[in-house]
Length: 217
Image 1 (cartoon, rainbow, N blue to C red):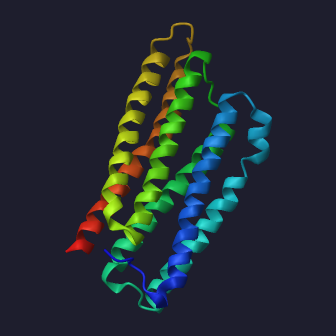
Image 2 (image 1 turned 90 degrees about the vertical axis):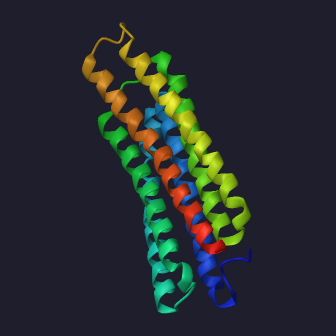
Image 3 (image 1 turned 45 degrees about the vertical axis):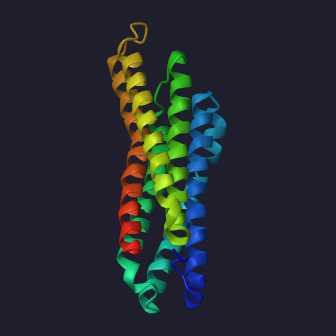
């Protein structure tokens, strides 16, 4: 299957590549910042947390430019709706990353020592799920044969993230040294918020899979 782009849409292809790079950058910042928070490096976390704002603004600008190009120049008309849907859903991931980082900065959830390694594992799995999703979407544009391979990887990471999410919740609510119920609920809330990134990656990857099937027909 040929690249979805043709000569006159080379600029659009470049913008989509940069946009997907920006999504990757957002999740790398997410992993870096939350890892610092878990490790107790709160000062460094607070100093650099605003970096995600710049990345989100860049992603929004690129998305608007891509939409403009798609409509003004009538590029890839047969797949335009699928492209817009995929990019808009991916933008939700960048928005969600920003919200998590800022909510943690504001609310400062308490993380018991025996939960920290599990939280780090969850963050790693969520990051891997988003990275695999980005590769999935790149494949939709450039190499359809690889789309389902990356969909399967997203499914794997999402499933593993679900298991770690449940493990964290069980440890939190069965930890009798961690007595304050409000703190237990607070940590459960943030665990679910983090895991949503893997859930959303799975949903978007399935949309990409369906869009790829349509292109093959």
